[in-house]
Length: 332
Image (cartoon, rainbow, N blue to C red; front, top):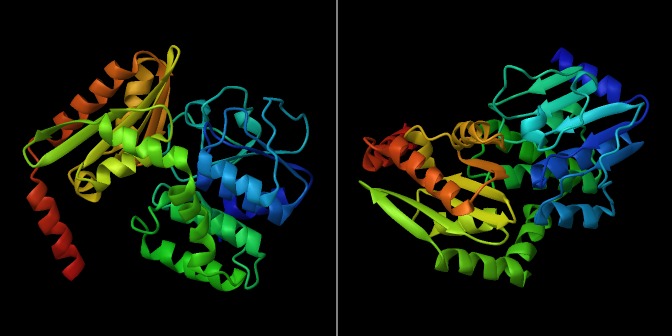
């Protein structure tokens, strides 16, 4: 058993637990923190930099009201889920030397914490949480929903999951006596019934700009909200890499997504957007195929830089070769 995992479990069993969500907290962040909070009890959940649309839906379903002010508790555990430093959490004020860090993003050399579990190879934070709570044979259904929501969100409904992800999924569903339908309804209702989300996807496609480099297609779109949903829409209609961004005064926010072929060609959006963020003192990072970037500047100019950086990275790589290699890997 991982000693850090045991230390974290022991710490969460004692005293009070204060969970801090990263900026615009996604479903994996929210679901992971909520699963820990419900399992270990005596908790507060802080979201001083906002929660995503789907994350809010999950919190409402759980009847959990996050604390939106950045107040820092003098006692109790400080738990940061799905982030590891000021840049990745998206706001200052965390006492990292006191923090319990549970993350699955690429490690940063200046990261510090009281106890740290950081597994870049793990598809979602929720899979780590499943091990922290001990993988019980019986699990409360609400905790199962939290974990499954996190896994499905960060793996593109299991498309980016490994065999370990599928094993954890099967264990969680069995322990909580849930079906996939019980969990997917959260996503389906948001996708199919929320008119604002549907209109944003349509506007995103309408405002799309794209260009080819060889057989690759990179698309960008400026939109007011639901950047992640717009990116997925652009990928679904043919883009290999998609960026969607919004402007709010001097501040901008960009979400990026890449398909498996682009990732196979060496694209790592998390590294790309983190580097761009450092150059303008912004905040950015994420995974190879899913990342975000925010700061002060002009959204049109920033989307253009994302576009050209992606095109430069793809230049010289054959899309046809990536497809052939993927088929070959699957056959073998």
